[in-house]
Image (cartoon, rainbow over all chains, first blue to last red):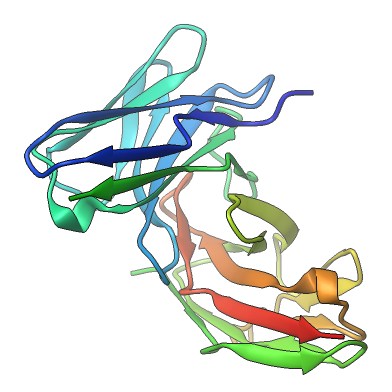
Length: 115
Length: 112
């Protein structure tokens, strides 16, 4: 049973550039959430996608956008990169019905370095 | 709003020592509580969870009890191993369904 996969594993960009990160959810899952984990911090919620629409959003600027495809995979796009965007970006998948007890399963992450 | 406060690290223990990592939370209503573990260079793995007051989550010798009266979900293990060295995150899922709130993480190092 394939777990959550993410690509690429590492990425180096320069300020002002744009980046796209990709995520495939765990088999059977239809919801994808994205988190940003700065060095030495806990993950911060960016947004969640379900049925190809953004269902919830955390406190991140519009430079952060996403997309979900019919096969439930997802992309995270970040425009006009800033040095502070350097972080580990984690994708998590879960089942669609919103329940407090629902478990999210995380991928290995994409480490983004902005120079 | 919802939040999680986790004991500051790092924590350094000898093998077979007793482990406690404190976690307290602030939330409206009845959140679900989770412990995730992150090994070096990897993503997060679910360690255990509890979904209602007085529930005890357990896995791989780790335990945590959901205490509503003290708004706590402390992680414990009776005898740690070198392989338990990792960063541990406490998290909650509350009224903002589908969104997890994480603590800052506690780095655990176990020496042989």
